[in-house]
Length: 112
Figure 1: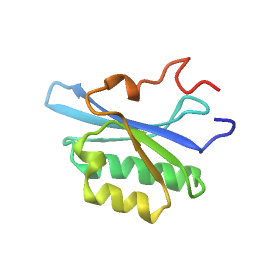
Figure 2: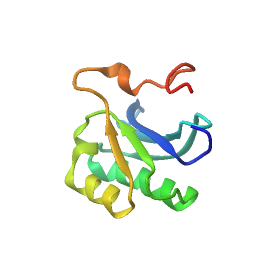
Figure 3: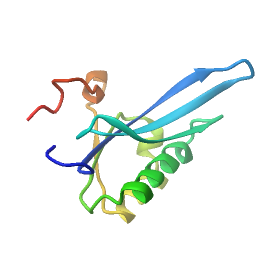
């Protein structure tokens, strides 16, 4: 990545609170390795990741052809998510089946 807004990665994690579980979806720009946006909800349906990606699109206005890499979670494979990607000209990339390291972001990952 030689400039911002070319490749984003997304993931979901969960946070235990005194009342319930909360689910956090993040969008990270691989150029800066910073969180661009995040979305939180009491569920982990596709709307959670769709909301996060829509916020990133609104905030950063990436050009068509953005590469969006995630795991193979049902949220990212859902019809509503794929339609969102198509509508905004985003190229979907998913980790290999049963390979959790494909979605890891480290100092050496995606190095030039």
